[in-house]
Image (cartoon, rainbow, N blue to C red; front, top):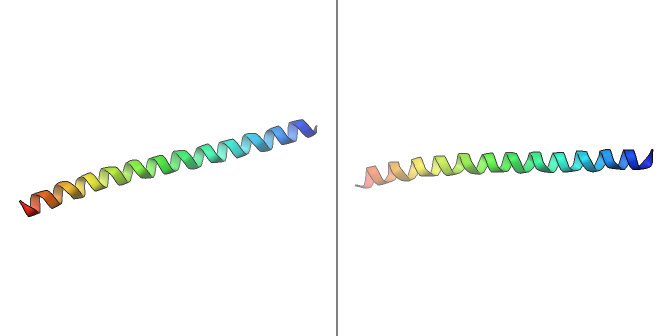
Amino acid sequence: MFSLTSGKCILELIMSTFYKEMVSVANVEKYRKSSKVIALWVNLVLR
């Protein structure tokens, strides 16, 4: 019973960590795309 409960806790911990990683990766991708767009716009304006 104890091993089952601790296993479930570990699984939940891993899943929450993985989810946070996924979210942060998604945010980084969004930031990269927006920064590329901003860089293009700045280049066009300064040209």
